[in-house]
Image (cartoon, rainbow, N blue to C red; front, side):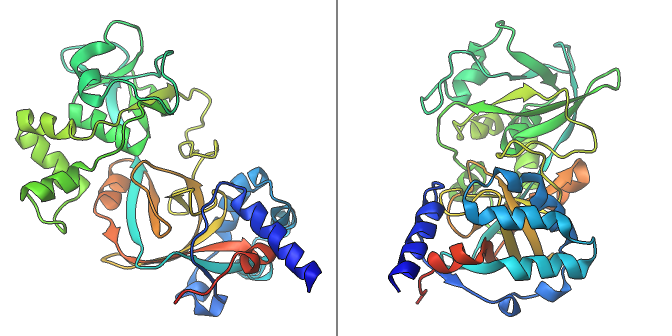
Amino acid sequence: MRALARIAATATALWLGAGVMAAAQQVLTFEELDGWSDDDQRPALTTFLETCNLLKAPEWGPPCALARDADGSTESARAFFELFFRPVLIGRPPALFTGYYEPLLDGSPTRTPRFAYPFYARPPELRDGVQYHSRQVIESGVLRGRGLEIAWLEDPVDVFFLHIQGSGRIRMPDGRVLRVGYGGKNGHPYRSVGQELVRRGTYTADQVSAQTIRGWVKRNPAPGNALLDHNPSYVFFRRLPDLAADKGPIGAMGRSITPMRSVAVDPAFNLLGAPVWIEKDGRAPLRRLMVAQDTGGAIKGAQRADIYYGTGDAAGDAAGVVKDGGRMLMLLPIDLAFASAEPIP
């Protein structure tokens, strides 16, 4: 018994040592997952392999190594997860699911009458964890003329939503496409402009989406720009010249993420790199195995996830209306799952 207790304590320490907060956790069976047997887990296995070698706790070593031995069938992929993992419910549902995407925007490497709104590379004086200029101050031109402009867009709303998504593809006038990714932020807290519109009584909570925000700002330019400044958080970018066109944007783990198989989570509660089972309700319900490979300023809490929908306008339209409940479970290697579990009343 003492040996088992030491193993459990060691596993829990390794789990919490990854920077993850303790939260109420409960181990479930795969039979208790709604839709598990209907999902094709092969894309999730491929996505898991993209980042599994970054998981350093020893419990992740065997499943990461053996994942490559799956024979490519749905049955083999499902059997792999069922053999080495257990679903763990962290926190208390209902979850909140939203969506994000990689914008494809027209832009210019130089300022023109059409393209007049820049987005910036990280200033050299910026320090992580230290507050820098707010969005309003930066948009007023405090960085202008320093050579930090990566490109210019034709609409300040496009710049704002590029910040929200954290990555993008910029199509230049000559047809060249520039890939950009997250390069840092100004240290100010994220504040939702959608919630601010609800507070003002402009929309109800069920009416707010990325599309309604975009439309309202464009119809009301002056108060719209002031609304965007309600969020003082500001994101800086970096060029990604070596990122292939068929690869997704770079997530928080430094690897490409996969449409409809990668999610952004709160790393205070959910381990980056771990498989995550999604039971999203709403107008387009999802029952799907994904992988936690990204984070976001608005993604806070154990039952909170942002689903990556892909690149371009269609992905943006689908992602922009997602605000659904449901349930999220993390798949952990069996030893870690049982070592960290506690009953949920």
